[in-house]
Length: 261
Image (tube, rainbow, N blue to C red; front, side, top):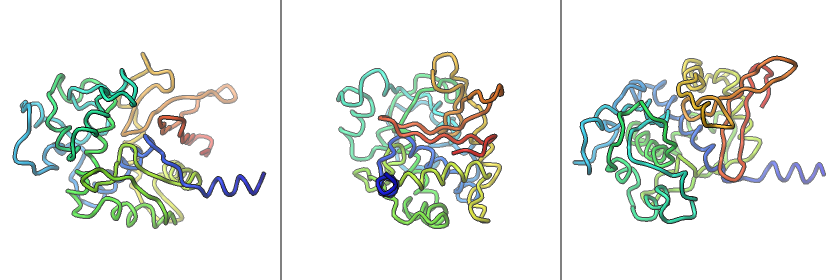
């Protein structure tokens, strides 16, 4: 049993949506390093396309924070139909377009940015492109340099879009032990073995309950910067949990009050 557990822990798995939390971390590092001014930067300013379809002045108002909190205001629905259905918005976008970021940015607006939570994997995929644009560095290299290699994570892999960009919304392959390291990094305010990899301010901003989803979500009370935020009950006390959740059962639970991952 010990041998099986050890070999299993050394196997890389496709994380699917927990990849989003890593992309969020990279956004924070890019801000910490000065590549991006703040989460208030207009999201469209992180791209250099000559024009956009379905232009609406509200697109200029969309911020990086709106993307991180899934409140873009774009017309989108990836939950009504299964992902295997070609009519699913995510399946249609990735199946019918080469430049996924441009396809997302061309969508019509239906609400003001920052108002309505709509889960959007394509937005996190576009964020990968935006970070690559802002840093001038291939996203996987940026991730290795500032996050993975300092944590002794040396064999992570990313699935890539047709444009060659790591799929930040669902494409990260990682070992289970390395996923656990990521949770511990957040519990420890961005410090790994004495190195401050992510600023404490970004960690605090990430797990702040920005979007109340308690009226419909059965698994958390709120959403932060690409993390689900909920509560458990332990010894008569309420303890907060920071959660990444992926289709098919990929989960990371970080419970700071108990120093538990």
